[in-house]
Image 1 (cartoon, protein in one colour):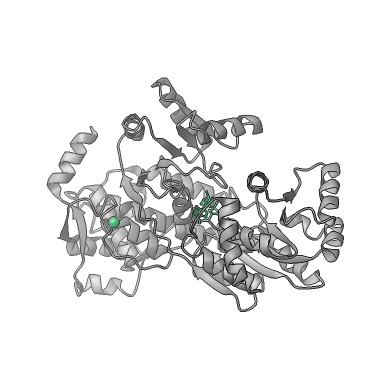
Image 2 (image 1 turned 90 degrees about the vertical axis):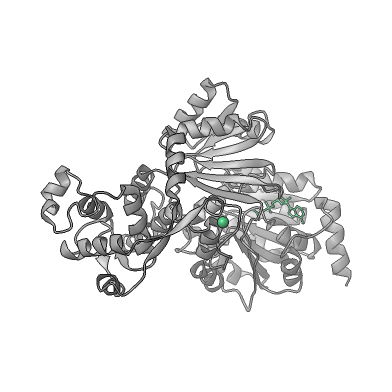
Length: 530
Ligand code: ADP
Ligand code: ZN
């Protein structure tokens, strides 16, 4: 009972909030009750206080394991400002600073210590930890233990080894924004959580509008959008540094106060640009996905993805930086076919998993290709976008949210059985040897060197759907893939294959219908785009 009151007291006194948000209280109670705890909440939901408040109530020290130096600095800075004694121990400290901090820690100066996972098993740190009273180990970004997670960190595997060395096992709490079952199970297994309380709060962010556009001129869309919201703060995510530079430069020359962020800039400039954005000196930030982790800006009114990200996890996390204050905000994704190619290149060249052995790498790449496909489907679906995302994370939405570009467009249900039949026949007749583009080009009757080389111009289906626009053919084939009437191999060739359900299409045993934009609307949209 007393803890109950103190919990509220701390929330108010230190953090300045009157009420807990969804899930926070339950997680805090579980931790305070000495129970291992896994909290799965979307970015911005408020995971930090779930371990920071118990940390202040526990008799001993809380160690927070965190993957990013910048994240630690920000959190520790914020805590000290709130009057909480906290420190971080990572490679950004000089040897001298490090020993000083450890010494303070020995003298019980800190309630909360952020530690980089690589430090846990070092001799100095272990010696300290063995003698200290450690009440809790809180694992932030806990999905980093999982090879199925998007950013696996081998150093996270040291956490368990560390805990096992401690004379008394502390409470372990873990937090992540990744909700998939594989990752959740991995966290519980690998961190060896004992009968943990597991809480997933809703992933739905009702105040966010989701939209997908496939404009001819992306830049023009961005410029018009930004211009129409001059007083708002927004982020424009781009796939590469080069695109960041380009978009930033062009917006600047249009007189829009923008700043930029990517890994190619020096520390100082990055820090300055980030601050300019956070303190509203530059309302628009053009950045790669290096920007945003640990950034707490509540009034971002829109997040535009200039390029499609490589998976829904990344997309939702980045888009989710809009509207943290709960006020309406917009998340737009500007799709183009090139984005798929860029991402495929990233995956094939393993641009972010340097340390993996060949076997693991192959598994990871296979998984990444599958995720990229699901991301691509997002750009093509005509169903509710929010529903699509929630389903991806294993939640069930309602099929109609009224706040996404699909729910707000008028569609008609179109019978696509004939197109489907032709596509599936084409896959069959070519011996299941080619990818989506070749199939589409064949049925559309494209006269390209590739089609001639593959002798697909002699295929019985060649040109059979010449009258249908390529965009529609692509939508239908995506629909077939999404519903397993066809499949693609998970290797870099992405070859289209038949499935058990293909037979039904070939035998005309199934109705295949899908939502498509009304023809008239499509035409006006296209005109506008010109
Ligand atoms: P996460 O780690 O889940 O992404 P944070 O812990 O950084 O989220 O919290 C996001 C924002 O929500 C922060 O600005 C934080 O101060 C704020 N916040 C957390 N708990 C509450 C609460 N109970 N009421 C209001 N704001 C809160
Ligand atoms: Zn919707």
